[in-house]
Length: 422
Length: 121
Image (cartoon, rainbow over all chains, first blue to last red; front, side):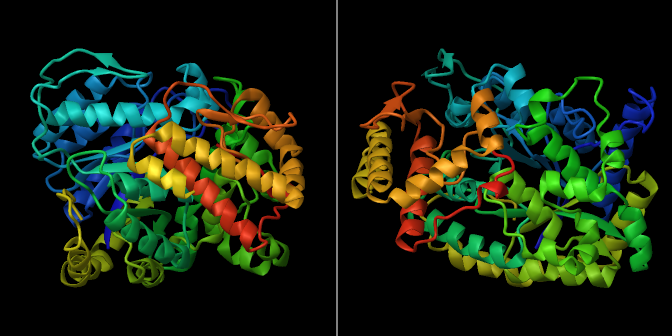
């Protein structure tokens, strides 16, 4: 299994203020670049950056192509993942997507991972005039068109439902041929199956348990082998899981470093994604971090039916929480799983045990949410360093000697060209 | 569902979705308990809020709100299309939803506690 970092670029507001300090965003972006640079030097394989808009406090990563471009000039090997690019055309015209992806691929010596997605928050969709019931169709047309623009010389044009564009030779073309590895984001089971049917990697945002992950792996590979109709010219078999992350020499210190990161992540996610709160967000005025801190733990539970990953021990001791059935709805389910799943929080030995269970289920990549809530930059750097020096090397070795062999046995049954960095 | 599969192979995504809708309506007509369970979901306040603001597409047992809609308030529910063309991804998502529902109904495992429905995309 390979490892990477995953960034929303969270920036909780100061508790007693309606706004951040002037330097807060500046510091956030530059600290993240330092973290990525460190991860690259230690052998982490991926960094993935989200694209979100207007989700203040929860995600300030609105222009991942810029962050990844900056990271490309400060790193040598780490792969630069869009986690994701919003491909419904009202967000990003596929022509501009193709040009940006290709340019980033050229200046990074072919290190781009092209992750795609629809977005799912009312605040974003409503602002860009995207109807909920059309975003899936928009995503498909936008993604297909962007990939065609990267591979056709010239692009022969499209008269689609959402994109009309004449014949043009869209340049530059990406360094990776026929195009960078393709991914699609989603937490719903159907989205993972969709990824397989389209020959795309699955960026799983559902915080699966190792047991669920194993079932998902088997189904995913079977569908990709038997029912795939590639959206691009090469398939990218791959499954990514997410986990909160903090590592320290002692468990107590790891918990301190993790702090409110997991809990705030779930709370803020629920704030924007729940139909009950998302559409009622007071832009520029709501202080989510204050609400988070002022909300008793029990009420947080009631709201999101979840607890932070960092409080697993509490959860295990709570019979009622254990007895609760998994929520049926996808967002709540992701939050619930985020809470119930153990997390990569602990000593190097504890984190090793945790990630090993996912390795055993043949997951390809685990992305760590290291920057989250009000975690401190210094703590994040030390966590990355500790894991990178003490745990990562053995996983990298097993990846090359065992997992690649496992994958190759399955890839031999594929009828499609493969372009994957795993 | 065989017709759905055949239609997908022919790139006839509208027909694939129509086949799924027929299967869905058939289930609701033949299994009143499923319809009752669906009604309980639709009465959930979060689902109601999501439907009123258009910010929910999926809920347990509920026909996904992509490009094809089913009005259940009539004597003869039928599918209507918002657009002339369904996309491939919409079609396969309807297919996955319908197959999963058939599987759950066959296994008598479709009951969902409406209070567990907290949010949805």
